[in-house]
Image 1 (tube, rainbow, N blue to C red):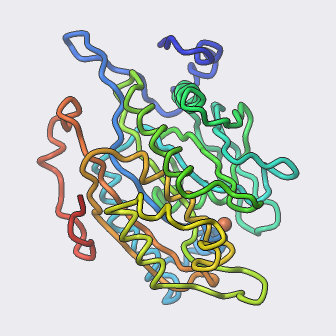
Image 2: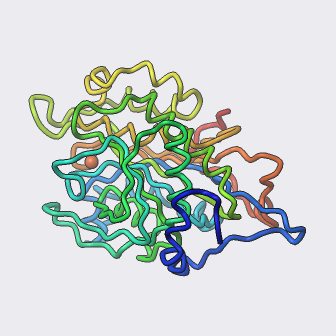
Length: 338
Ligand SMILES: [Fe+2]
């Protein structure tokens, strides 16, 4: 495989390791190159205690069941859609980025080891990377004037591994990942508008990636919560619901909030919602909310799980049989939102 993009040719060795995911590019019988397409987006949370609950098999305990049951639909949807790669927007908690914290960082490694100092969570297996897709996204982001940090060696913390374990609970992750870190912990933070545009840039880049793969977009964090200070334990269900509603139907409405306003309304750590903005921004066409689960609290955090289906252009028709197998949206889902 080759791409006429600076950077990608340097990683033939890593690309050979793409066999980890068992995926390779495909062309049609007529020789035309099929581009990658985004199947949809998932937003969910990464509260560290979820990792402990998984390790201790507490998914059906009364405290945890309302949260974990929100993934029943996610599992069915992923089993049907079978993405080849996932772009994960998340915030690091000081496990990889310590004294130097980039506003935006994109992984370009062939694998990502898990490290979670101090959280008491079992260490997860390494996740397979996709250097070719990473470099394609990096080149596109820089061309769009995003001054990102490129990470050819990158640890990932629970903000990446817990969502993977929630989405694929069997212990194996059948796809390659591209982690995209967003600073939500050290002010000044990027604006909601900038994060939305980051996602739009990545969405355009994926649409121009000359590989016939299906890409999932994931945004990880929150929702409302504050872990310390005078407002410790603060959650705001009404604001969370407004954010989820507008994220689905009119995400540009959310950029009216400044970071200080968002902290006031969602709590000091509620700004992890910044990770949800590029997830939505990457989706194109008619976006449909297929599923939503909202639960309070998990460790003083409001936890939401949302599935969006991305619109499909005529050139990106479903593969044979996909449409016929499509099931009805979950009964807890909201009506389709344009
Ligand atoms: Fe967090």
